[in-house]
Image (cartoon, rainbow over all chains, first blue to last red; front, side):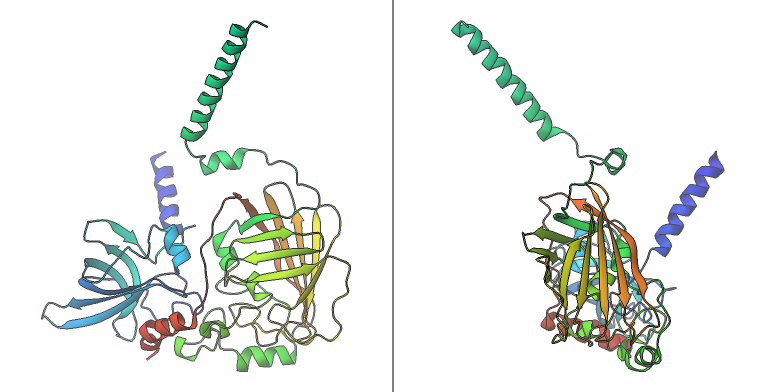
Length: 130
Length: 266
């Protein structure tokens, strides 16, 4: 019985893992699917638009070097279903983001998760929700 | 009847009505499982009206294009291999090389709007027309059902020219010609020519469900007719559903290109 439950759990996790990612018109080939970065940042802009919403933020590494990041999620229709809105983020917000970075090393990525200043977590790009 | 009895009856009815009303307002929302188990009412006769959405999100969005297609002709193979550079599907190229017309906000056109990003759409019936109002790109199609013929040599249009008729009380068949050759068939860069003829079959299975089949007949691009959608399931949505705009605005697309797509392709 216990094994059966474990199997069902593992299958569910598996389904979530493969239901991943699409970039509406151009796949996800530019991103490193095996890598995830977690960093703290300050929001500079939140663009709520088609074809994809995206977040710009500044982040400093351990040596104090500042990077300007831009990370994308899906379109407003899909993100609304995941609980996001035009007001989810605003310039100056201190956030913790989890991103799947670009393969070419540019400060670009897919936004997988963001923790807002109030502690709320919003899920970005890793599942398709209807 | 004595007046006091009449007043009592009115009072009881009012209390009952109030209780039922309160119950309706406070009843918990139906769980998906419960909704699924109920038996749908029979299909209404000759009626597709309502808001419809694809049951399986990913099947509707179809980012990787159609599941399969008939073999290309030489013309079709040449266009697919040498001209169209899709960002997804088996012939996908790096993002910087993609030349998908959607990226610059050109219209998806027909039938790409049925084969990619098929999102909620509303069907409105008038005596002479069936109107299809699509959420994606906020466009609509007019399907004439007044018995007119399709145009013989039409000027191309992004969404072509459509006529429809009832094959029986529950199947509505639409024929479309005159599509603009600049549009792609799907997200994988499968082409079509100006000779394309599309047949859509909308089968109202019951009150809540409709099946859509899309047949592609394009002798210039494919060696034989084939089904691009085969009885895809559409579910009737609540009549008060309110869908968001989903418009590709060139200024927003440019912002995305500058902020994400260009640096990603370097």
